[in-house]
Image (cartoon, rainbow over the protein chains, first blue to last red):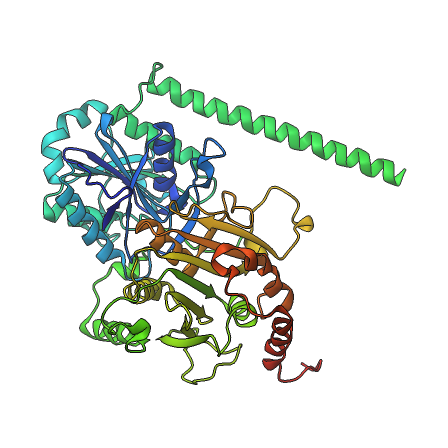
Length: 275
Length: 281
């Protein structure tokens, strides 16, 4: 259930709802954090539900000492009317057997709030890709039939790759193909439910592994930005990706250099001790 | 963790949904699940007519103090509660894999229970001692059943809880942490002074204390949570004493009983649970 922060009614008609799937590497959640903090989106309410594990902490997007002490809970809603964007951030895992009720509550909120479309940011286990999925970019998309009608042309221009269906019985028969998103949490459930309910939903996902998933989140948000153009990037997307790559390489080498230097210091200290 | 080099281990995923759970469940599975759910249902029992109001009507409450965990519960028993000024007005009964609430009328500090007390001289002051483990799927029920019985107008909530210091994240050396220590979290509506530093990012609080504070944040109830980080999980005098600064805070100030008595009670509380004090395995 959506509960507004200040008791006032909010209108999300025609808005795009962006939300994460709690999935491998928390990539969707990290990506949503990046969107909220980049666009400095104000909090407008909470998603009060019995389906998520309770958690509280102080404002993760703190910029000053004053706003660092604002309480944050497990499911919060942020909105930016100028971009017709509403974001639901989920900060804790689901309680066992509560995936289905959560999807139902969420989709009925989407319907009642008259959001134009839902974009689900997700991820899937990189190690479970089949031969076809190993080729090219690790980023994939999925569109429900309802949304496909309206955005198909635009997506084709972007030359994105649709998430491949995999054989239901690999090695036995390739005739029957199914959607398989291992490690994607509620992604498949939410997508199939949206298909049957005629909800306009897109899933953007990245194949990845558990670890430091911040680069994956950057990748996913850039992917989203190619479509939604939330922020204008003056350099082309390719250049931007190259920049991110070299920046990471640089910071890594700086860190490695630092570690090496520390190691040398340690060694020299030891030498002194032994000397 | 791999036990030898080259072993393939399956890392637990944060994604949650296993492939098994995606498959359709049979009628028998559903029946078992339904029965288990019924067993895990929590019940809140309230004394009829508490605060002079009919049992159906919500209890008028100005201060609601919730202690979660054995140490916080013992703190209230030692410094606030006594049988002269307070009376029991309710209890929560629950069952889960970890814990079952006791049916005994007089509880021991080591028992698992969740009891509600009312101040006789001011029936709007309510106190909750919850020493039982409330499972993740039961926390929401707990909130609905407890807060469903309490009027929200003019209500202020104080939560006391403990958690292992190992969960505290800091950039400073953990060797110098003055454990046990208190940290606070407060809702947007809580405007009063907090008597310890606020919890820094990226620290978080989970379980029942988090559920209560979240509830208060969502429904705009002024609330404060005092979390005591300690290195002893069991009932412990040093941990209990760490809550002492709260005795001068506004919600607890005029509820404190004779301190000299308190120390005596504290000693008694700590020895009740000990059956023997030997060093055999």
